[in-house]
Image (cartoon, rainbow, N blue to C red):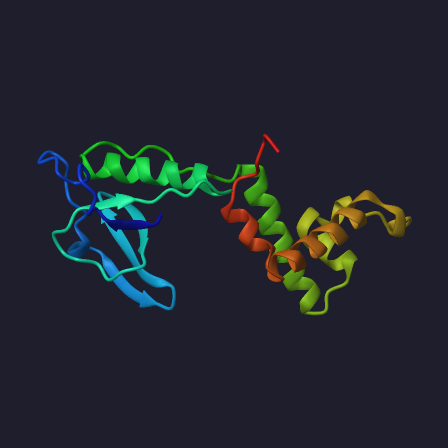
Amino acid sequence: MPIALAISAGFGTSSSQPLLDLAAGQIRRAGDGWHTVLRIGMVDHRVWSKEPPVIGASYVAELPFDDDFDARAYAARRLWRAMNGRAPGPAFHQLSKQRRERLSAAIRALDASTAGGSYRMIAEELFGKKRIPERAWKTHDLRNRTVRLVQGGLALVRGGYRKLLRPRHRDK
């Protein structure tokens, strides 16, 4: 979540508003600015600033109206809640159990394929040898599922894992 120094009138002037405790975070400089991980309670909050952090300064969240606005606004609200001693609430985007299991199977299938395993061997390992037919393997549903899992694992390795960080947009 991007932050900036609160230099405008009215921002950061409330004595009841807690300051970002940047001294308690992990700060690193990168080519695009300063990245800080603030641990408040048991939750890590990631903030980014163009300028070097100033200990004891007041900050504001910058929320551009772009495709990531929902995620940034949610992160800003979680950080605000944590700074004020409230429970931050659930993470913005969590994978379902079914999705996690499919991703795990895709990675396992890709690993086996990369190690030289045939689709039949991979399917036997993933689904159990008893479910794999002796005949008609080439047209069996589990063969097709195995092929799709290997392809899905390959897509993750080629950068598709980044999509896991963004929620699916339901309104598009």
